[in-house]
Image (cartoon, rainbow, N blue to C red):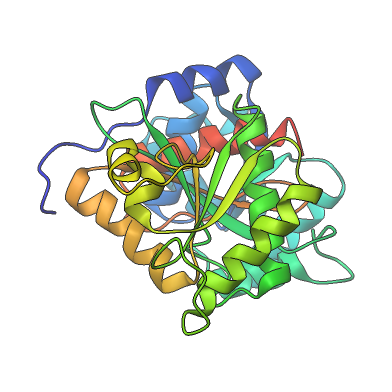
Amino acid sequence: MLSQHPVECPITLINSAAAHGPIRTAIVNAVTPIAMESAFLAARARLIEPVLIGNKETIKTLAAEFEWETCHLEIHDASDEEAAAACAVELARNKMVGALMKGQIHTDIFMKAIIDRSKGLRREGRLSHAFYMSVPDSDRIVVITDAAINIAPDLETKKSIILNAVKMLHALGNKHPKVAILSASEEENPRIPSSMEAAELTRWAKTSISNADVFGPMALDNAISPEAARIKGIENAVAGQADILVVPNIETGNALFKQLVYCDSACAAGVVLGASVPIVLTSRADPPAARLASMAIATIVAQYV
C-alpha cells in the first residue's frame, strides 16, 4: 500500500448498525479462518446473528480457534460450494435469514444461485454492487457503483444501479443524496458514449426520481471538489457535493475504489443491492475493518429491503 495509515471502520456506521439490532445472516461456506473471523467479529459487535453454512466439522474446528461455543451456533451442513449456495438462498427465500455473506465460495457459483429465475432472490430491476467509501480523518462519505458486478452496464442497467444506490443511502439516513454520473467532462460528446448516456440518465431522473439530485455527465474532480467546480464555473445541485458516483464501466469503478483503498487507506464496505436481501461479497484481501463495515451496511439495509 502507498498509504501507511491503517484502514478504519467508521464507528458511527457500527453504532448505527448495532442500534438496528443483529440480523440473521447466512455465512455461505464458512470453512476458512477469514470467513469465520468475519462472522465472529460481526457477531461480537452485535451486527449479525450468524447462520453458518458449510462442512460442519470444519466449522466447529474453526470456531474453537476463536473460543466460540458451537452449542450456541446455528450450523447447516453443506458438502460443497453449490450446496452451500443453495442452502443460503433457500433460507433467504423462506425469510429465515435477512442477509447473506460470501465465505469460501467462487463468486460465479454464489451469484448463479442468487439470480436463478425460479429459485433465486431476484426482484424487479437489476442487481448492482455499491462500495461505501470512508477515508481516515474525513467525515465525507462517497458511494461508488458499480465496481463489481455489472461490467459494461447499458442505459436500463444504469437506471437500476442509480435506484439501488439511492435506496441504500436512504436506508443509511441520507434522505436526498446527490448522484454524479461520471464521464470525462461535463459536455455531451458523441465520441464519448458515457457522456451521452449520462445526459440521458439526467433527463430520465428529472421525471423518475424525486428524492435525489442526479446530474451527468460530470468529471470526477467537479463531482467531489467544490473548489474545482467553482473554478470551472459548474453550477448544479450535485457539483462538488456528490454522495454517489455512478461509473461508466467496471474498469473505472474498480480502479477508483482501489485507488482510494491503497493510496488513501479508505475503508471499502461493499454490498450487492437489488435482491430480496442484501449480499456481502467479501474478498480475501479485505482487511477486517472493511469486512466489518460491509456487514454493518448489510445490517442497516436489511431493515429497508
